[in-house]
Length: 439
Ligand code: XUL
Ligand code: CO
Image 1: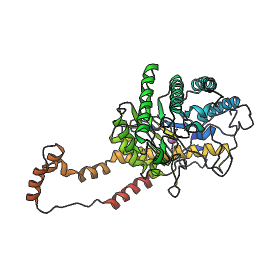
Image 2: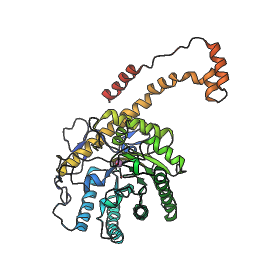
Image 3: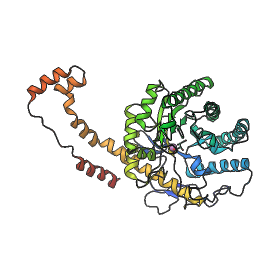
Image 4: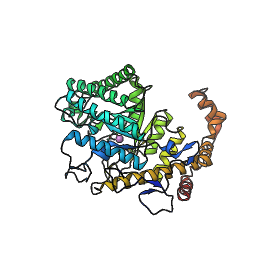
């Protein structure tokens, strides 16, 4: 039964008829959908910070979570218990991956040397548990936003000592990610932005950010880390304006600084909506630029202006996400990492299971619907027909680069009245409903 989540058995697939909330209704890991099994398509990962480190604090109240390791006083003993509990959780849930920040798994010491020593001890334990349970690291990252030293940013701080500290911390985080065989390493610019332009040298900050990323690329090569680097866009929070605002801003940044060959994007639903985009928009933008790497799976609350990091339950959204993933050819190094937290009043450990189960089932359903949509090809055909004018005549000349403004003028003067066709949006929304409802 395990030591930590004693009243929970291994979660099994019981099918849509089951009324057991501690079972999967749709996520059937070995079921084949198209060219791979659900498990291979979805590559679920648990986010260590939300599920094992977070205590349920908010700006108005202290922690509420009730966890099996609560009574342990010593920070290192607590860190070890959490790590053991985490693997019991992954195993019971049947996920193959996890993600962590350096500071989620081990406490900071008095000095960086002491902090690194703590980290080494916990990483050793994690490595052993990964082998025992056959669990893999989707990506590692460094928390360079929580400690007061990062008050003005990390790589974009006005203080060169903070830049240096950030480099030192990321060096170590890369080493431990490599040691654990991480498939990737993520940069989320937690405080890489500004509060006011009145005190900000934007050019220097952006140049420095790129300098740090280049150093990381160089160091990865030096130690033989071949995992995929990701940047995770987010427009605001904690700072007023984050430099990695959205997919388009990040792609531009990577290209400007010659980093685009080394990075892909880790796109998060709630970050997309905070930037005023749908998740599908962000994924599409990354996909068409060959930069769709991995996904932080959650959902926000459109009535609230902050990052609520809720577990994903919206089937329209999971369908759209899996549509983009399938169109990109499926995940390679990436996966679906539940960067999501249970609500503060959902404080029982059992809630962690309910939350992940509904997320996994929602994505399993989304995968199947998206696969059917793509297989049927109805939407593809409608889009193909919509742009048909570019496959012949003047349209073909435009896309082949054979004409300039003078030729367009000559053509238009002779062309006469223009005829447009309906966009048929409501029909398409009806069609999408049909897929969702028939599921
Ligand atoms: C914060 C966020 C991070 C990153 C990793 O909004 O999403 O947890 O995923 O640093
Ligand atoms: Co995230």
